[in-house]
Length: 433
Image 1 (cartoon, rainbow, N blue to C red):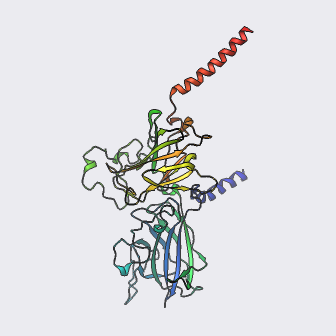
Image 2: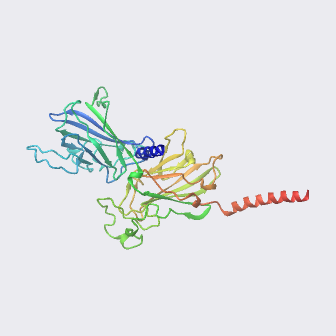
Image 3: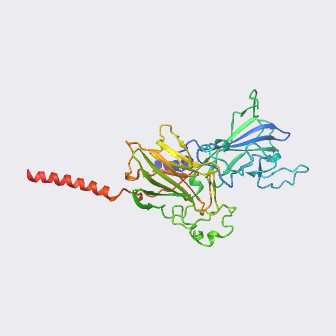
């Protein structure tokens, strides 16, 4: 009995850490690096860099929100490239008033187009950060902060703690700040190296279980060899929004202001049986001698949300032989090197990298041509459909395997007929003998 209780306790202790593990992106994380670039009379100036090392999970609009708790009574004198959402009570300061006096400041990125004297490198993108696998150059966000009433040396400075990250919603868990070797910089002429006075890192990982109780997307299937369509499962994303949904052809769907987002990012969904904001449809379109062709369509059913720099990840054994992708960009994901069965699709820049809100323009689609592997290729048992599908880093709910489009009945009848003929022939020979 004691051993069973011990295993149960061990399971719950390990659960939070296991939940943040993504088997298709095992090393994916967001690393927040603080580089102290100078000491001041009562504190320090730090450059804070947020790097998204996740292969296919970006931070979309309305962007990231970063929070922490000061170890002592530190204040923020000024910020460049970002701002806190509240100033707090700074009444005890005379003369210069700090930017923020809260013990738990909450920081957001600045909007594009702010004056140059408020900008910092890799700032001012409204908190939107691309996935590393999609666009490494846009996977970084940064700002500068001047901290006062703090330590003024490596020995006296106290690291901030209890970091939180919204990207833009829940799902991220951040570990404690850890001192690491100081960052080394190269001068513009690449002839001299300088380094930060002190550096510490904070690592944040994502868990879909923490982000939402229900999936955020679902998958439907169809094929050229079967007239039936396998829809998304009923209430695939939960039906809690069923009473507030909008019928697609109703007057409300064309009402002015229907696409205006709310501060709490609450969705306004089109009425469907699955009630998901996103549906991914996988259609097995054509069969050639040496190739086969798939059509992929992504539809947005949320009237209050459009998806910038969206990503779609699929896992299928034949993705190791992608010949051509027609309207999406494509990148294979090989987290385990020896296994090449996962790929990321994403929109072409300035063409279809923006998935519009629900409505006539709320979909993107492409076709994929794959070369057959004669040793493994088949249309039987649902082999032509993906094993896993992710949209914007969240796993989508697939239909149950027994609902997949199957080959025509003639194939089954023929196999039964042949076996029946064999048994009949053996029985006839047995009777004659």
